[in-house]
Length: 386
Image 1: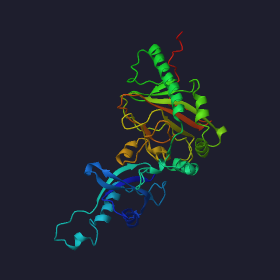
Image 2: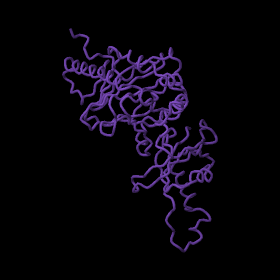
Image 3: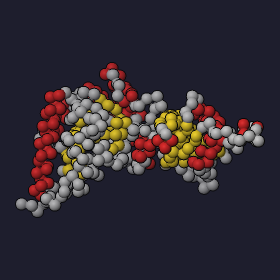
Image 4: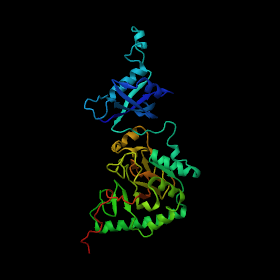
């Protein structure tokens, strides 16, 4: 029987509260409770934004997962026992029992089940908003960037490209977009581009007014990556720590662009966990997002769920990241880059501006990995066209 994972919300938070709970409730009916070492805090929108401690717990039966007679502990039972521990409800020696003739006083803590899941839910560090993802010095990059990719599956690198390099790349991207628009108009006039869903060899729609256009065949694009990105020492350092030596790595290149009117995407991972591999294995691919304009709340950005790359069972649980405010907003300047593990859950956010949001995507990967799931096999130009 797989262990049951639950996320509890406890309000108000207090110093030492998580330790008090872990020590006071190590098990229930012989089933061990493994309390998460990491805690977080958020505001409960349903309770007037009350400050709330988030605490993860896993119920693990001592008899082993394969025992047909393994015991179960319902998440609701854990909530009830924590409530008893903190508020003395129904427990021997509580204040209520000492004064049975008096009206019960309101509970000191509000304890609620926030979520259950088939894997531990990653939480935001209680003392930061992923600040460490944003502030890596050049001197610490080689060590810290690798550690953050392992822990969170994402890291920000500033000023990868200078203004001239961004301008040169933007020229290539604009021409590629114009070319594919012309091909779609000529060969696929039945499509309402921006509304209809389609997947071709060259391009795929990614929801309303959002597209993913391959640049592998774009003249000069691959050479640009070699000259202006791969030759940077910090890039080389991170790729070596994540994927291995240069001769073990190649890359795919595309531009993800969102036009005005693009809506929030659903949570997704670009790549799956390799079948048979351990979920603790290093990545087989890492992606670099390079925005060609400054990103903000109006033009949009990409939102990530740090830590979600560690388990394939978190697919479908993206809304929990929103509920618990465990997200990281990849808002950065033109020429900066957000690196992320190919298995990390993320989503593109809406574009409510009046300008295009082009983000170049470089997928650095092990040579044996071939991308097959994100594009189609049929060209925009039908094979029977003259």
